[in-house]
Length: 239
Ligand code: 5GP
Image (cartoon, rainbow, N blue to C red; front, side, top):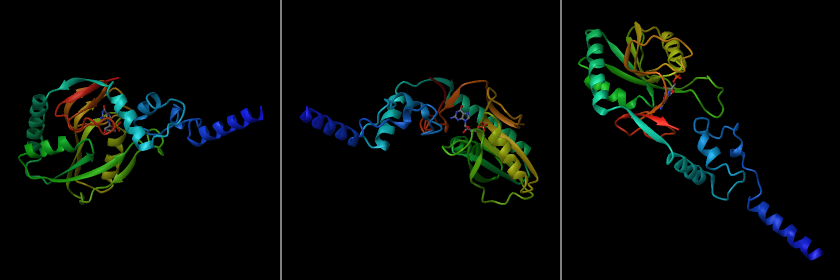
């Protein structure tokens, strides 16, 4: 009997030591292991117990597993995007002819759109970027934080904010209020996609590429957990 107890005790110690019996915090659906991308950690990796695989490998494995089940449907082709950008660029070039214009892009999703738009303009422009975080493990829902501000002075200049998608409107509202304090001559907004489904704050968008009412969009610079940015078309993810 003593022998069995002693063996059982040793096995228990080994299991705890190798972490087979330690509950995995990622299994908690309310936990925010990655605020933007919780699903794979909870579904694929949430076995309830920690494996011995290092976390960075486990996250990559979970993410790949999840991504293999994500389907996407084509929303806008390369040709449709190019045509729309050409028409936006003509309109902007016309409206700002003989005026000093500074384009302020909101990273990261805007990088492809901004590059194509700038090359289609027929007027000289200056460009700058801001980086804004609207999610994060230590942030409250709806909280917006400036990560990188513009370097150029916009005082007395015309500013055109370039955004990839306007969704709730919170990011744009935050940036507009912030830029206004720098006393530019004017502030207007150009967005590749105006997605109205989750709008919380009414925002004026002066130049709109496409209007959509629903869905999570990827491709052409837009990501889901840093994936799909390289796609030349725009897709809607189907979960
Ligand atoms: P807001 O909700 O503040 O208007 O949008 C904030 C940011 O969320 C956007 O700049 C964009 O980066 C991201 N976002 C909103 N909707 C989508 C979407 O459908 N797809 C992707 N990839 N990002 C989105």
